[in-house]
Length: 84
Image (cartoon, rainbow, N blue to C red; front, side):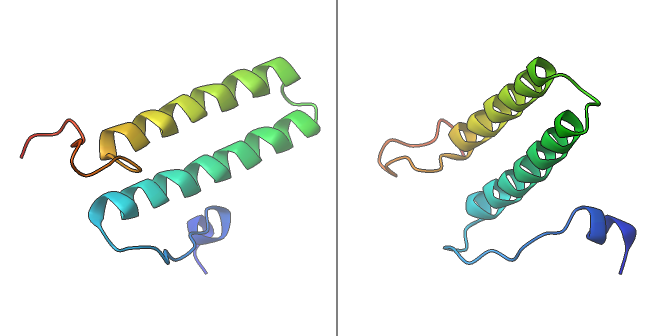
């Protein structure tokens, strides 16, 4: 097993296979891994609770921005703001 596969495991995707869903799933898994790491750092006393909160809040904003840009959860007739 590769070190990165051990440290950053990926679960397979079971939803509707569309490019935007796969990208969002990857972003969601990365979010979960990074939140777990931040929580472990805070629990271990390496960062403060305030710093952990700020980091997780920033990650949440990134994930939310990704969801919006990919058009996840929007009515298809609304469009996702991307022109093709």
